[in-house]
Length: 420
Image (cartoon, rainbow, N blue to C red; front, side):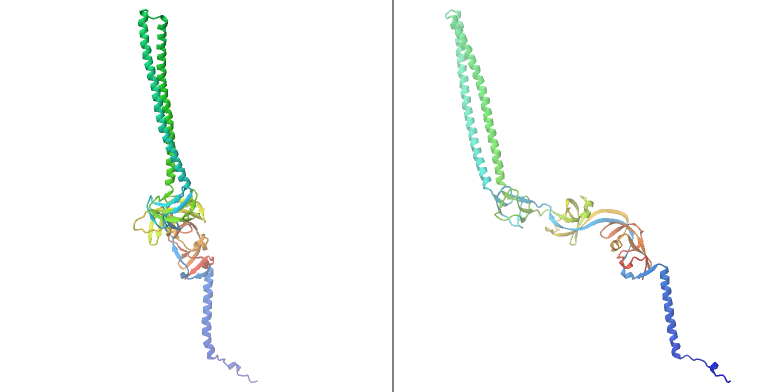
C-alpha cells in the first residue's frame, strides 16, 4: 500500500500572526511588572499614594511659644459719665448730641417749684430767727442793766448802813442813844450787806442766763442757715453741668420730660482719654489677668496696651475686658471704632512646636503623618498649648521632623502612604 505525503508536509504560519505575537508579549510583560509592583507595595504595608501638591507639610522646631487670644472690640471713652436728675422736675435740655462742652458748662436745667418754694420758706424762717436773736440780745442788755441797777442800789444802801453803824458807835460811847437804837443800826448794816451780796449774785446769774439763751438762739440760727445752704445747693444742682471737657454723647430722655429723682438725662464723652473694650470668649476668662499685654490693631496701626479691668460676669458667652494704651495726637480715634486685638497670655521659651493646621481637628489632635522622603507614616502625637499660628508638641516628634499639617482625610487612616 502506498503511504500519503502527510509526513512530508510543513505547516506554514501567515505573516500576520507573527506580527501579533510581539504586542501580546509586551502586554504580558507589562501586566507582570504591574503585578510585581503592587506585590512589592503590599509587602511594605503601603496601600495608597498621594500627590505632594495635595498635602501641606511643616517642620518641627524649637522656639518661643506666645500663647494668645485673638478677639475683637471697640474704642470707648475711658470717661463717659452719665448725668442724672438731682430732684423731681421738668427737664430742659440745653445741648444737643455732638455739641462740644467744657467742664462746668450748663447742659440741662430742671424746674422744681417744690424745691424752690422750700428754699424761700427756709430763708424766711432764717430771717425771723436772726431777728429773734437780735431781740434777745437787746433783752439781755436790758436785763443786765436792771441787775446792775439793783446792785448799785444795794451798794448805796450798804454804804449808808455802814455810815449809820459808825455813827451809832460814836453815839453809844457818848451815851447819846440807847442800846436798842444801837443794835438796830447794826441790823440795818447786816441787812445792807446781805442785799449787796445777793445783788452781786443776781448780776452774775443774769449774765450767765442771758449768755446761755443768746448762745442757744445763735445755734438755732446757725442750724437754719445750714438748712438754707443745703437747699441752695439743691437748687443750684438743678442746673446740670458737664463734669469734663468733651462732647454730648446722647440724650437718654426727651425734651421737657418730667423726671423723678436720680433718673438719667444724658451722657458726656471725654475725648481726652480712650480705652479699648474687648469681648473675650468665656473659655479664656480664667486665663486673663490684670496687666497682661494686649496688641491692638487699628487698620495698619498696631499699639501695645495692658488689661486694666475684667468684668466679673459673662454675657453671651463672652467676658468684657478694658485695655489702657498710650495715645498720641497723631492717632485719630472715634467712639465705637472697631478694632482687632491679641491678648498675650504667656511667653514660653524653648518649646518644640509646629505650625497650626487642619490636622489638629481632622486627626483629633492625636495623630498625623510624618514625611520621610516619598513615604508618609502614621504617627501618634500629643499636642499642648496653642497660639494664633503655632501649636506645642508634647510627644511624638522632635526638631527637624516633617509633619503633614493639612487635613488627614485623604490618607483614609492608612498606616503608610506613598508621596509622589
